[in-house]
Length: 162
Image 1 (cartoon, helix red, strand yellow):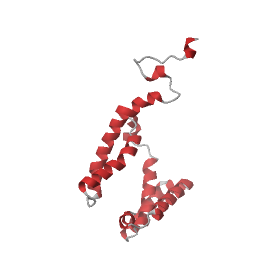
Image 2 (cartoon, helix red, strand yellow):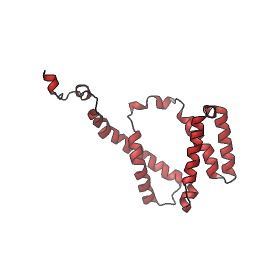
Image 3 (cartoon, rainbow, N blue to C red):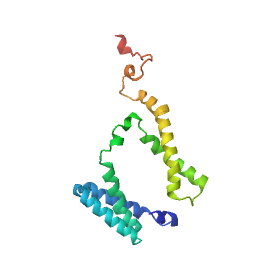
């Protein structure tokens, strides 16, 4: 897939292949069990080894993503104590990656760039959650103002006066 992107070839087919693989895994729950997942990883690895990288990744990435995503991980069970970083990661990842490429160049090895941009993105996401998003949730419709901001004055409506 990366070679298609770098050479200017159409990458729509590559993304379509990933989408189709993920759809197949969704439609056939049996394929998400350990043995089919392991088989998919082995097939994908073999395809990558014989220079069929895009096809191999279509076996590996969706299977591995779902295998990891459906498990309960001890370190992630209580992650909400840290805060909800998902939106911050979503909005900051791309700009941080682009700044990384601009600063260190396109030829920077992927893992080197990733090792720099991931911590920066997570730090920005954490700051965004604690400084902006968590506070903004007080204004979400349907939340009673009296319970959302301890120590602050409650907004009194006309209905409260009667």
